[in-house]
Length: 357
Image 1 (tube, rainbow, N blue to C red):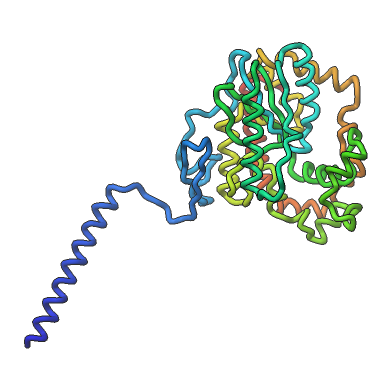
Image 2 (image 1 turned 135 degrees about the vertical axis):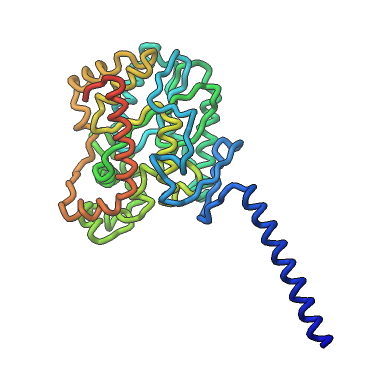
């Protein structure tokens, strides 16, 4: 009998503990925000603010995370005054040299005080992705600190990152139809274009290409499933570029895409498409007349004076076959989602500004 009373007493104590624990959980649950049990990343952009982002495809809508909105969004908003720093972190093989030539004209006309190029800012390869991106960011910020007069511009093939806000930065960029850009890049790295010197070709472009594959066509590269044409980090290049320098930006994911979209909306004044270069320049004029008034007309004169498109077209470029296009459409799925997102916003911006294609 004594033993039975002890068991009953123990069971009663256990029941009381369970009821108390359940009550505490209910109280806490009501006072805490809901946290989705998904893989999360912490974004430390600007080193002062952090944002927890869930990698959840269902929560990613129109470049925003969940139902949040960005009241500081800059996309499509007119820019007043001239005292700004134009940040053009140009994507390779998207017609950037055309815009750089126009920048030089503006500089010669004293409409831009300085145009800084980051092309000579090399960082050691042994630093890895995160270390290399941080080192490059430091070099870029040091160069920006040296700018004494505005308006000025800084350009180069560098990923998105926030720069000194005291310089009133204005981000602009252009992207390109994903497969066209990838094919152009593939042949450019092997053979250059009409403006490429032999020295630059051998020293910079094809130094990382195995001689065995130097003359391989893009079609053969795709069909043989070589990493150069199938690595997800290559097939998500533009998306990753706009995602930025966070280590997770180098890993294709729903988060990478959402972050890239968010930066377009929140940080860029305009992102155009290379297939409508004239429209992009007209938008620059509309949004930033104090800086870019007349730039579209300069482009038309420049285009008539020389065949710029042919001189910057990759040599020996062979278009992909229908079979390869179908394969790459699947591999470039994330890139096309990002491209269509940017194109849709750009087309709507042109309508809002009354810019004709």
